[in-house]
Length: 267
Image (tube, rainbow, N blue to C red; front, side, top):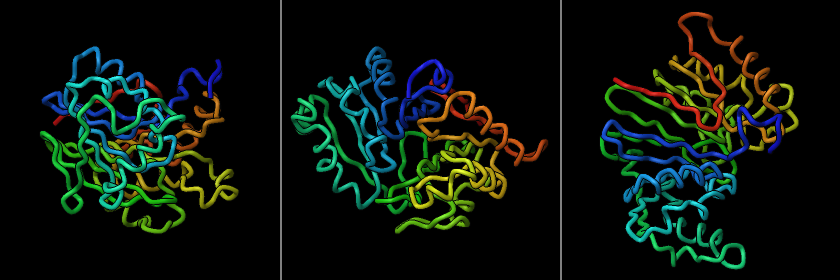
């Protein structure tokens, strides 16, 4: 959504940039937020990038055709997804780039695009160790735990904690995966009151995200995948309600992620 009531959190769909201690860039998801990121990376002259897709739903790939580095012949882009989906990357993204939907076919992009996969559930990139877990979401997908120098970030977008979708895990699986993470970024699209009418849609309410943060003992909880119709004021209210479910001292800190949000995790 756009308009004055959506300015503080913003309306872009999912995209997260991670930089290693050696300034290597890892990108998670290619929602509309990847357009502005691409402009910045192009200005920096980046010629090597890695992009991991949690899944292929439209809001997580729709920014990719407008990712400026893709049109630089010098760019080497490593593109990864779940083990089964890895074989489908070119086919699925080819549909998004195919005329008349988009004028440049995926196979004719100037950049050098290669696909990568996890060995078991682990992928290594520079100083990062990346582990994956199936998310509980229609059509399947992956969540990621990214570790470097004793610090860890978990990214679980589009993950329905109150319902196990085909191929996904149960609450205890995600609690074990998140255990002790410095930062957990988790789907919190709904309020508990909204959720019953949307059960099965593949998203969580904030109380489930708070429960996971508490049980896993994470350092901070970042609420993610905001409902597109929720205004800044309504998101503030959701955030305050979520904070009430977390201990005042010794428990996870909580923030609702906004466009341009940054956090440094250093060992």
